[in-house]
Length: 379
Image 1 (cartoon, rainbow, N blue to C red):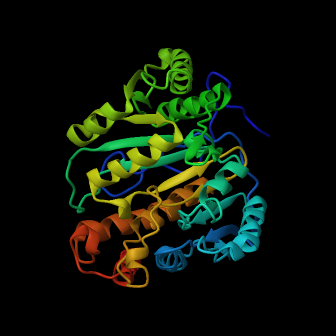
Image 2 (tube, one colour; image 1 turned 120 degrees about the horizontal axis):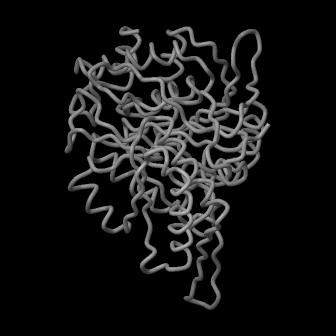
């Protein structure tokens, strides 16, 4: 059932799709995300069952927008909803139930769960679900949206991030009072897996270049392994015409804010991906418009690309639901519901371009409810 990523060229299934390569119209083009197996989705009475974890902060508001739009568009999806929160230890049992639901359904739509900073609190639920289910590849799409004010024009790149190791391995301890050791784990096997995912994504989506982001000049063993493995994988794709380059992460940060148009597909370890995805979001209009997904061996998890909780605007009906709706659109394509995905994405982009229901982050005064109803009216 599993098609390993360690073959030179992975056959891919029709999965979640990339956002439009051409924004002259708001239609999403047919492009695919590398997926290592064809999942058997849970389906009853002609409807797909999808695990829904709204998350903390603005999650309830933005997932409510998704449910409203999906219902208006007659999307054949039934939700198994789990109102997990990351604010309490008491939520561990409910979190485990939500993970079991994902195991049954193979696909989930998820908001961002709050992670306490104190060392006495639980570990991140967000990280746990990806690591425990080996949902190893994070894909975030950074692209200008017509009608949304931005700092740069003609930005269009895909950021691919390894989800399961690096600094997020969670292996740290206090070896002596006042001395903490934190381990960064990099393995050849998982680096090769994410590198092939990136090249296969580029190949299937007509992308021309893959950039490996690293800090191998300082972390010569850990990031050196990541870089050298990516270089080895790149050789297998030379005949496809995909160019490979590498860039030190600090230089990458400068290049992003000065000339982001040079990037096409970027692949990097976990922590760098977290930082770069947020920089990328700021280039094109903010976290509210950036969709994302996480693909693993058996499961797919769709969530906003920048992973912000948004506690400061929670309950104020001010959140922009675009990122969550577009993540839902990617999920529909993953399920093979192409017509529904196109219809919803067309309505959403038309709403933004018209400018009559822009939320605060897009320079308007519309509420979450106003924006959602405008999308529905444009279906």
